[in-house]
Every structure is written in structure tokens, then in C-alpha cells.
Amino acid sequence: MNVWNRWAVLVALVSTLAFVAPVHSAPTAFGAFPNNATHSNASVAAAIANVPTNAGVVYDALSQTNAIQVYNFGTLTYTGPIDVSLTLARIRAGYCITAESNDGGFFNFNPGELPNIPRKGNNYYMEFVVWFSINVAGGTYDKTVEPFGTVSFPGPMRLLIGLGGEVYFTGDHYGSGLQANAYFVNPVPVPGLFNITSIVPQGNDMLITWQTVGGETNVVQATTGTSGSYSNNFTDLSPIIIPKGGDFTTTNYLDVGGVTNSPMRYYRVRLVP
Image (cartoon, rainbow, N blue to C red; front, side, top):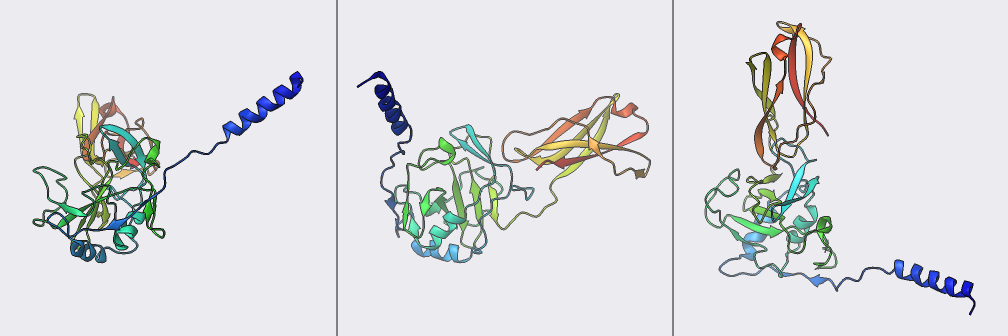
């Protein structure tokens, strides 16, 4: 074999190796929700029957969907939209992820845990694993396909479903401390929590404080005006401000020299998509 043939064989071999598909283990079959001291298949069926079939999009406290956060053992692994429709569909089908013993089990709160979820008595809520690689029609799930490329099974994403059909999402099941509150799936939160709470002079500067949600992208804007009247030509004043965590929070921005500006300034804060 001459040198060119040897190179041709080598190139062909390298090309073949480069396109070898990853090997995954066979998918795992779902089981049925158990009925014992920690689980009630009747309670699961009653709760999911009260969840609207069009529910699935996850919302933060400002009714926004673009900055839902997932923390895996304290590391922020994802920020963006999340839809749990597939998880709700597999619960409707009566499918339990039996590889995780708490799937479908009663969830009773520890003191201070997920404080924005109303307390409604013992065994009212149930906990469910959120795992994206599921095949409801085929009745299987694949534990080897890692969400976001880094999260191994069962991961930090969970749903809490109440007997009345309430659905909450947490992306921090392992407790990083940065996401104390749950996100919303059903019902959707009422808008109105995003607002400026104070504008206070500090010497020659002006401190603008507002309520928002960690992970959302905020920008302070300003326009000119006179007392009781202002132009609607708002322009960006601050750099992008993204508070840490995924919870309802208060943050601020100092407009240096804002008190001495003439004409006076009017402020607003916008969420950047």
C-alpha cells in the first residue's frame, strides 16, 4: 500500500470515529404511583384532575417567564423559560418515576421552607420530579439524558401539586439558599408587584429603589419634565441590573448628580426581555 492509500484509510477511519453516535442505556419504564404511608395514588389522581390541561408554563412573581432559574447543588445551571407540560401529562397518565422514591409522595413543609406557598394542612401537597427526557406515549423515561448538559438524575427540579390543583415549581430542590420561594404554574401570579417603592435624595444624588425578582434583567430609565408634567421619551440611565437568586426582592440604583439635574428627572424601571 502506498503512502497516499495509507492516508486515505486513516482519514476514512478518523471520519468514521468522529461520527459515532453516543450510546445511551435503554429507557426505564414508568411505574404506578404507590399507595402507602407516604403516597396516595387516589390523592395524586384527585389533585391532577384539578389542574387545567393548558397549564405548564412556569412564571416568576412578576408573571414573567424568561428568567426562571435552576440551581444544582448551589451552582446556577440555567436561566430561561421552563415548561412542565410533559411532567403534568405523565402525572395525568398515572406514571410514577419509581427510581426516585419521593415522586408523588406527600410534601409537608419544614419551618421557613418555600414561604410563598400557602399552608393548607398535612398531606395537602405532593412532590413530583421534573425530568425532561420522558416519553409519555411510550411510558418510559431516560435517566442518562442530562438537562442543561450537567444535571444528573433526578436533578433539582420539582413540582408541588395541591389537592385543589395548585402547581408550584422549584429549581432548587437541594437548597442553595438563593431560591427560597417557589415559582408559579397554576394559578398564575397577579401582575403588580414590580414597582418603584421610593425615590430618595442622598446629597446631590438620587436613590431609586424598586421591587423585582432575582434573575430578571432590569434597567432604570429617565426622562425630563416639570412639576406634574413629563416627556414620554424615556432613555436608559443605568447599566443592566440583574439581582441574584430567583426570588422576589428589592434592589436600587444611585443616579449620581440626579438631584442637581435641570430640568428635573422622572424615573421608571423596565424589564428587558
